[in-house]
Length: 401
Image (cartoon, rainbow, N blue to C red; front, side, top):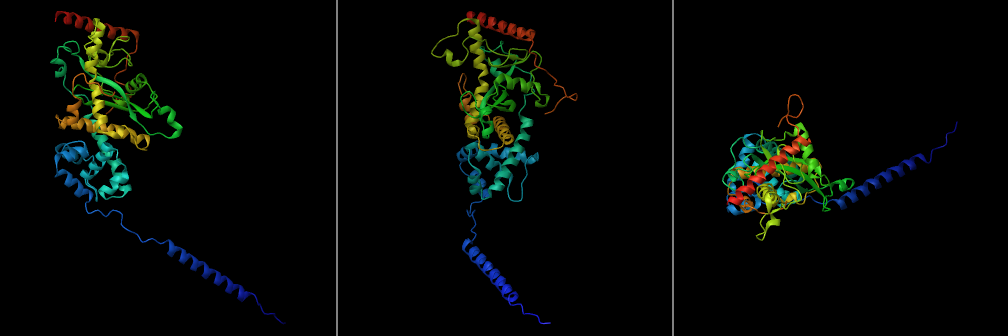
């Protein structure tokens, strides 16, 4: 049997081999043309650790301007975080570096890429350290954002005849403020406040030492103060610091008048700017409102110091909502730490002026709140009657003087 030779098999195989060779040749040429020699990006001789040491050993003013606190306070903060193991040295970054990066970001609203270049770390490393430092400072906040244990009348009240004995049972003030927010387009409407800016509405309580005793975040800018107030008090997990029996907070007219919370008289002049130019208060209600405003503005001054020290609160970066809340709490924690460590801090001194107008852990075993806000008519009438007594006594004593 004759078998015809296969004239096509060998040529076909040869063509396929030539095609493969050509393909690999083209790939080689393309890769060679696209190849860019790698060059190190972080080439500064001043490492992050060396930068921190230079700041701490340099002019004291430089430390305050960069880190928004003086050198002893910065060192004390780092040591406190290290000793209590809220933050520890990693293989490449010390606690001082991590805290320094955090303070530059919140104190100057600097972006992570700038910090990465200054401290000679990758952006991923800086971002991770920033998150860890925020969480560490928030853990610290559980210990220093709380009321003092003293039951004595605060000297600001006891030593001022405008306030004593009328407000001797007052333990602090409560108010809300807008903090800049970032939100996705789908949620912009709920974050847009009455001034058409994208914000959070946070509620804070403070004492007369200008320290925060309670910080509540998580509400959008459209929420009114009364709604945030009620939510903060009714959730047992918030651990709201209720006033002792007979004590109370000063609040503005946007909050309910009830036991433990004393607002001013509505429809009467209240804000300090209403009494400028020698325009004295007239009658018991205006006199009460004037002194109430003079004492309650401690919370406004606290907000003034907070926002002046941390510009990140005026222009929040594109952080997730949970991180935005943590950043706010961390800033309030640093605020308290500085107040406790440095009584003559520049910003506190600047805002600690009477009548200054500025911009305005745990739960019960039962799972139920240990206190409930009493919104009954009887509670409102009792607090209103107490307010009337104070106003009448003020007016009577003022006439005698």
